[in-house]
Length: 305
Image (cartoon, rainbow, N blue to C red):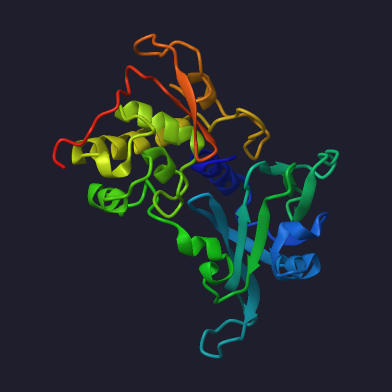
């Protein structure tokens, strides 16, 4: 599943190629991909004639801020002979890639990928395709003057983003305080750390020297501080590498991410730890695989309980 670094990589790529271009129309090939409005035709009608001003990211959600051009009424005092071209809000285009979603910026002459679910056509002659093998991905058009979270309700449940000013030691400690569940499980909770996923939770725990089974309530402030710093560090490292491709992640140009080749523990069960050479172990927590080094991540108990 694309996690924060992969979604951030896509956001940056989209901002390089799609801005200030008018959406001329499109094609919805799988109706259930469109979460709002509840019709592919209405979705395309809402987007047609809009221009993408900027792509934003909230957790694993992508949000394109849209505008719509129109002619302003002629101001008699302006001295102009023709009406002026102005802009009004065009709403938002929301995308969640879920497990296998890809956004590909391509030429219309390129044959459709097997699992193409929707297409948006731009006045530049290029198109944006949403390709999704597992069909769990979703797209939304949010009308103008409507807060995105009222339509894309998953946004309401997001915790602090690791790159936001709100992701402080106090915030993270407050989220973990007295919780009797493994720290690995807590990190995967989007209401705790927005955008975090299985790959980077394993990696951050390794860098912080914390075992994934450690209960949140057993962590001391020093461990939480190390984990906060490790989370930011590993996410930034993956963004710099263009994300991780273990299965099917591609950026908007169709290129794989490179972080997987330097992962500390994720997907390396049985291989030697890059620090101490102890074999990496794999266990299941809440149905998800966790990878860790039993030497570098020795189980600690909180000293100030």
